[in-house]
Length: 382
Image 1 (cartoon, rainbow, N blue to C red):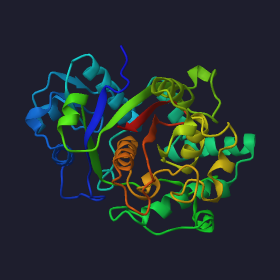
Image 2 (image 1 turned 90 degrees about the vertical axis):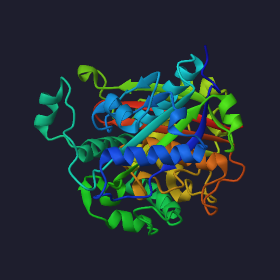
Image 3 (image 1 turned 180 degrees about the vertical axis):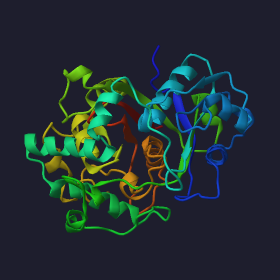
Image 4 (image 1 turned 120 degrees about the vertical axis):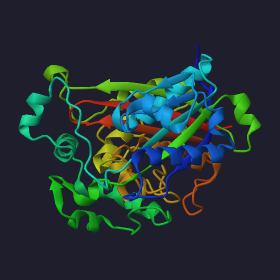
């Protein structure tokens, strides 16, 4: 059984808020669900599949009850920030198998309003946390190693933030809308050497949702047809010290099956939604997805190559996590949303990619320098 072309994205919604002190997390989930249903022209009574991750308060049972759903299939796979890309692939599997016909995927949370919940700890936690590992310094280790091994520079990393800012200026909901320069990035305070503050993503409240359905149902609705034609997922970890190469991500394993399933290559992609928790995250993933050779990411992103209308590979045209939105510190959902906007022709006119018929959305979850998951989805306008 193949899942190529089995899942059509019929509804999308990104919550406009970036700060929600007056809303509960469950309420945000409900609001993004309604927004996606309205976009698709459906009601909650139509939903028979529900997908959520660790951001859903109380888990999948509590959320199904809170949302008033009656489902015959559900999935609470949690792989951090890429959970929602994984969910899209799993929804395609469920639809292809006849387990559901209209699936809802939601993300929501409030890290900007309050403290994040405690980070889950695995068997290795007692050993790693004793040395003061944080998200920032772990990603900084990846950046430092990439610089040491391949000659990547802070100036090259800064171009990724510059590109994101050029796009964010047109997004009325973006948290940071000012266009910045390479010098601005380099002059921002060091957070964890070699990463500066502007190399880091924003922290926002909010969320987003997707409606995924069959081809027959999608064709009965009024939205432009967007389907998933390739999906892959993978996990990478240090394996007890046997896999300590910090210069590549699990994307080296999630991308090839996605491209093979889709029957396309990186050269065919018109638009790329790339997870951008930090600038180094983008650079490493561009290499791992095959847009350039390993070690050549610095040259690839320099001089505006990621800016829509300027460079060869427009990326994160909503401003991405670096400038617009990184709700719950989980950026995978927003990557799918902007990819669908581009394929529908609904992105802002200043950043809309002409004749955009093929897009990639890719994310990671966990921490690149320790253990993480990756998911790659290739989407097509029909």
